[in-house]
Image 1 (tube, rainbow, N blue to C red):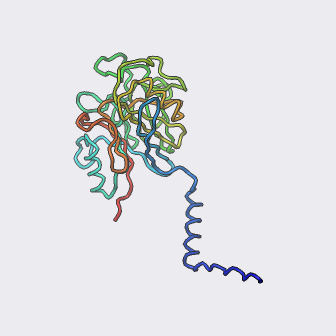
Image 2 (cartoon, helix red, strand yellow):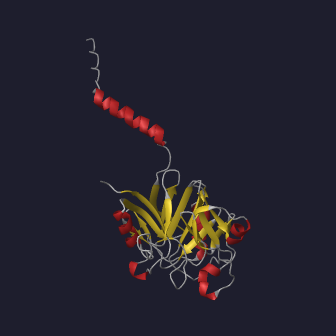
Image 3 (cartoon, rainbow, N blue to C red):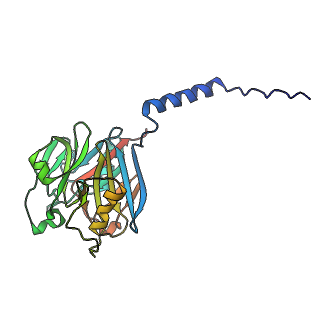
Length: 270
C-alpha cells in the first residue's frame, strides 16, 4: 500500500517570532560568552574553594568603604546590601577588599570611583602589618577602560596607572607565573584565605578557601587551576564572600568589621 505523506507540523506565527527574537538577542549578547558573574565550587589539592568569575565587559565591579549617606564605614556585607537596596540595587557579589589597620582604614593604596582615599604604602617590614609586609606585596586594579590587572607594589610605584578602583594588599601569591618564593609547600600555617587575579584584562577571578590552607597551596590554585600569571592575597580568617544570596568562607563568628569591600550590584526587580 502506498504510504501517506507525513503531516506538516505548522508552527504558530507567535511562537516563530519568539524564537527569532531569542536568536537575535543571543547574537547581540554573544551567547557563547561567559556569564556576567558565575560562582562555583572548585576542588584542588585536597581542598575546596569558592571561585567567582566576573566579566567586566558585562558587569561593573565596584569598591565600597564609606557609606556616602553617612560618611561612616559600611564595615560589613549586610550593611552594604541594605544600602544598595535603599538605592534600588540588588547585591549579587561582595568580598572584603584587603588588609586594613587597627583604626579600620585600608592599610595601603585604596582607590574608589577614581578617587585616591589612601596612598600607596611602600613601608618595609612593619611587624604590625602582618601578611601585608611579606614581600612582594601588590595592587589589584581596574582602570577606566575596564581592564583589570595585578601588579607588584614596586611596579605600581615605577609606572603608576590611573585606576578607577584599586586596593593594595599582600603578599603577592603569584608573580609573573612563579609562586612567591617565601611560600613553603609543607608549611603548617593553615588558614582560610581569599585572593584575586585577572587571567585576562576583561575578567576578574576571586577565590576563597572553604577550609584552612597554606599559602603555597592557595597560590598554586591561582596559577595551576585558575590560569593566573599574577595573583594577590586579600585576607585570611576574617574573609567572606557573598555570592547570589549565600556566604562562603570561614564561619561567620570568625569575621570582623571590614574596610573596603568589592561589590557587583544589579538593578533590583520592581
